[in-house]
Length: 516
Ligand code: XMP
Image 1 (cartoon, rainbow, N blue to C red):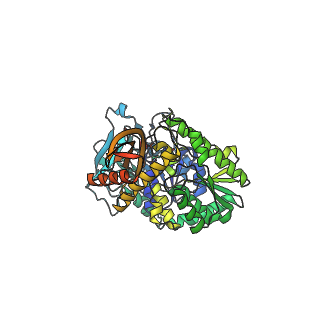
Image 2 (image 1 turned 90 degrees about the vertical axis):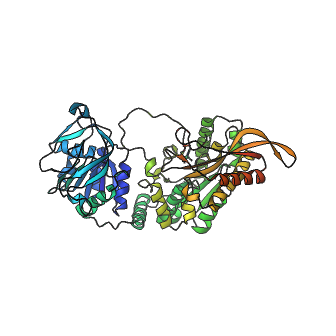
Image 3 (image 1 turned 180 degrees about the vertical axis):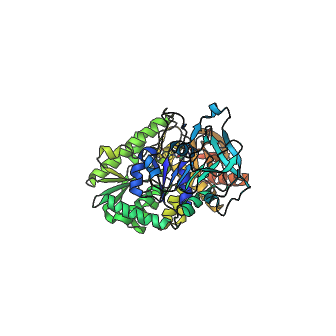
């Protein structure tokens, strides 16, 4: 195991990924909880992350001294290198003092000495591309270190103390733009720390099952299913661990995609034999949405109503000790933040937040350390087929935020049909997996058309498809024009109530992926 100490860098999660890709298990702990994590994990090596903070500033974070006393190998990345140098007796100066700007973006370094990090990869005298992002820099390194690579802006681009197995890189090996970065990290965890690199998703699954059994004991667990990949994988994993101590609840709010409820029922009841309660709450949601047109009001109503329904069902089941959630690493916001200021709410996302305290339940979140594609791997490990694990994300408020204006059952039915045709064509064209998310929206606008010899006056359907890595930014998917024409024709011909189809060419930002 590797312990990654997080100082609040935007890319700490990527370090974890790279370590796992090297076949080694790791966990991330914020710097102020690193000692406890160390005791729990008993790691074989430590990685110190980057940070938006500045080492010379008095209030900036430090690594617990016990990490340096542990005798284990340490890799410090960017701020991690600087804080390590500082704590071991070197000097770090802010960019404004040295009078030299920082380095941001692509840089080239020259290898000046051999080093265990470079084994089988970089040789003395070679130049290599790396990704830098720093203002401060080490100006005097600590005793025992030597320089093994330099760049124009950072004389201490890589420093090493081979006897203590301490390494520091001023650049970021974890990001994609350092082409050899993943191999450097693999060298650290395998060659330097001596870990075998035989960790697999199967091993992760077994470890998690043991952990869930230990946490839950003979308690009862309730899990809200959304039909999406994350909550499904969490539920199946927990069921493997504790069997019928788990009950799943699926709230059909009438805002689901075509046949989605049946798919969930078949998967959970017939395939996995997991106890499942399906709540038919369509009427309740539709009544509550009557006359509501403001996007935030829609979201808030759906979120609150969802919790109310879920709570009622949990009570009917006689309560539970634990609530299971498919929270992923990118959703985990408890990581360190130095920016302080509250970020602006663009949209109120909802999950079943608030419930655990109200109902006095503890949380079971077995996917907290994983990224989306790793959850998909775990899903396959648990026997889910590719079609299911590869499903596009679907928002909690469902079709309601794809129907600008008032949401009615009739409009949901129209949208469901159009959406199913669009996705059917995308699947047939073999494009589904190349797209992050594709869906139809139904606009509150009617336009005039002509079908046969008749005048029509019906709704406009919008089509959206984007590529993205994490949903935070997105590009428009560039369909062939003929493909869109074919989809448009099918929708107008087959879906009563739609007589015009438009394609959304807005990236994110400035648009968001969903329309509300
Ligand atoms: P936006 O529209 O904010 O969406 O660009 C980014 C990603 O998040 C999904 N999304 C949600 N997911 N509950 C969810 O579980 C929500 O309330 C919610 N709103 C948006 C959206 O589908 C996209 O993948």
